[in-house]
Image (cartoon, rainbow over all chains, first blue to last red; front, side, top):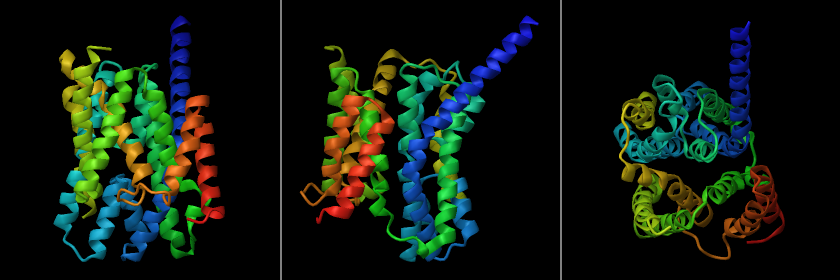
Amino acid sequence: MKNIDCLIMVINMQNLELKQGIHDSIPIIMGYLPLGVAFGVLANEVGMTITQATIMSVLCFTGAGQYIAIGVMQAGGAVFTIILANVLVNLRYLLFSTSLVPFLKERVPTAIGSLLSYGLTDETYAVAMNRYQNHAPTASYMAGLNISSHLGWILSTLLGAILGSYIGNTDRLGLGFALPAMYICLLVFMIKRKSDLYVALTAALVCLLIGYLVPSTMSNLSNIILATIIAASLGVMISERD
Amino acid sequence: MIFGVALVSMLPRILPVALFSRYEFAEPLKKWLSYVAPAVLGSLTALSVLAPEGFVDISIHNRFIWAFIPTLVIAIKTKSLFATLFIGIVTMALLYNFVQF
């Protein structure tokens, strides 16, 4: 009897974690909506079928990378160019994923953690890291957050691909500010020490400066990688004085 | 094409968790990694507000900068993601519909 009670408690807790993950994905999905729809519309315009556009969002889940693919296709570029650009665009996830390891270790089974990490994006990363500051990670939470965000991306692509050009300008709804607003808020949550603030400001400055001086880094997002490496190193140097 | 992109977008996310989970990182590396999140968020915020169209645009014509101000205030005051998102989206909608840039 006691074992069953324990089992029920564990299942209840997992349910709660799953629900929390789904709940936390709502702002992400709101932000993905206009982006996914726009991707669906553009994919349609360069000649992809509804199925192809949707499958791309199922298998890829890389907003920036998918937009690049459309751009290169439009310009009549090679598949090799698309893939090479995507290697660069997705390189930052090596950093994101590695920084999650100390949290997931021994709390989420490696196989499940690795599989669920496929749902890692700028947004799910930011939300998850924020949660892990004061809650232990669980596979259920990761599943709720990452899978529902991915579903949001897939469904909005499908919507865009089906409705195509019938969709007017979604900018008027202000949804274009959903992701920036989320970043702003999560940044505020993430800053706990002075050194966090300096690191964030340095990263912002370096990222913009590199993007301004070498505009090509803006489309492959390598400026984020460089800015993160420089700012995190600065963080290590100044944190002793914290 | 789709499978190629899928592969290169999948590997960098999955491999670190799959390969590094069995190792204990050295303290300095852990400390460095703990600054990755604030650095990434700093970069993302800066890019999304100051370069919303893919190029740096620091001018009074950039709506995102105007929307940034009340959004930041609400984020600091309320510490609520939903309130922040709501104010951000409403401000942006108002700027789009009622202010000529």
